[in-house]
Image (cartoon, rainbow, N blue to C red):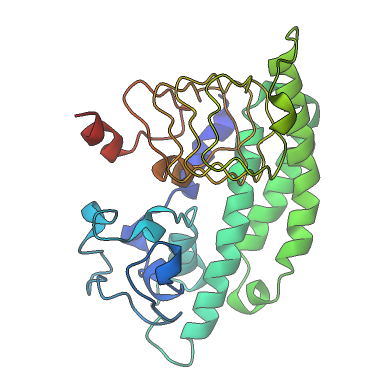
Length: 283
């Protein structure tokens, strides 16, 4: 890990410095892990006056899996404290739409910052560290712009400039993980955006796999060696990671792990926290 690793701190949600933006700005759908629908701009019924969630410790049991599956990457506090200088505009009918729009923009920018920051901890990417740092600084500077400017940003164009660096990083990291290893049967189905719903992958060679955007809902990964595996954008909801080794996996986020199943023997990257409910389930 490098000194850049401490930047992860600013990319973690700090709800105490936010105005409950994810609980107000976002649309909740009963078909996407919520017990009921909620319109964008409408406060969640569980949001308290001090912006805390009154059922935060029981979200899954209360049917709010969608909340567990969401991470603002620290965008909430950036919008609240930087973009709007600590002024809560979420209840101002005139200003609220802009605050919500800016929140969605910065959330996407902070997600890019998360991956770029991690790329700087991956030694195989060292030949392009300078390019990665330059792009990281550019994106960070964009997050400091005023609300009017942020609202007009072309996020897709920014992402198109970031993704080639992440893809190159992925190729080098996966190649290093696979060095000296022969491909085994089953690897042909391990490709970006693969449909691996409920797949039994316990005997599949997953080292250095490219699972970018793969659908791994309820997949069985118990005891799997996931060294050098790229998980960017992969859907790990209810994937069974008990006993799996993800310590050297990369482009993995906290929310992906929060939605998966694991236990005390699951090995995680150093910047990912073990979900409390894993320990409880372990028993």
